[in-house]
Image (tube, rainbow over all chains, first blue to last red; front, side, top):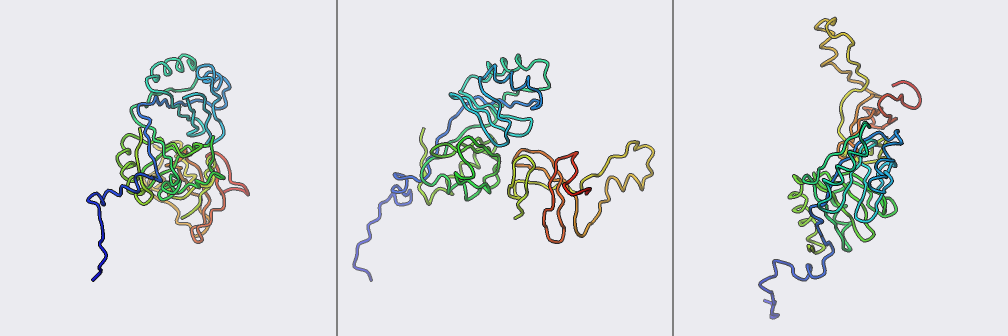
Length: 195
Length: 93
């Protein structure tokens, strides 16, 4: 029988040490304005209209983004883009874009209520994503300015590398699953949430 | 897991894709003129190729676009990937 006294805090189950020095730090950017844009890449008027409203070049190269201020345009497909902007701008932007794109074979749909933006930072943000996402997340293959749609376990998501982490756009219906999955997968690195 | 090259997104894991079965099945121009056997052949019957097989795939979790793949059903080697309306490099499927 051991003579040593084994001290154990009553809070041992919460792994407070790991939380203080979390390897994965999650922050939600809630209520952003999300607009789905579709149009003809081959029509120069499409990119011109977007640029006139947003001041942003439409990213025509697959899996790239363009950003200015708090607005980011993501390539989703050869005729599909996502605009994420600051909260409470969706209606204004939608009206302005629809006006600029009038007469074109294009669409602007406000999907702000359907998805949310989450940022993952910390020394193990990449490790935790790599557990469930088949993308090559190394900065050599996936760096700032790129984006990719893929899946994390069974959750579809849109990923964008940040200078110090990753930004994830996740659908509302998958957000419970996404958070629970990340919380569980990040436990070994220490997980914390900041506002 | 297969590494499938999406014509738009580049090489991605098979888990991002869904297979849509045999490619290049053309809808009959005049369905009313078809016999039941011919219609059944169009709707239900597919080739069970041993070797190079033209298939439709969709990048479900990625750009959600359909494209065609020539895949060897024995070795699983993917010989060609091409967009709808294109012909694969190296000739007809």
